[in-house]
Image (tube, rainbow, N blue to C red; front, top):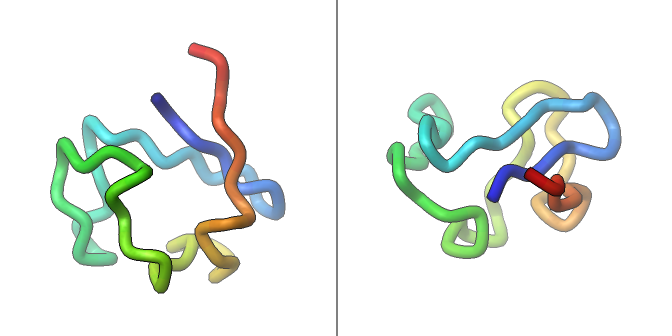
Length: 53
């Protein structure tokens, strides 16, 4: 499932992960450490919402 940042609209897609943020491709959003932040605007993981795919 993909997640969208409520502030800037960045989409976290587990297929791609966030290599620059240390999150490997294939990592489900639920398994991302709580200290991870949006790579675009820097908000916390709790500021993301699930998308209906």
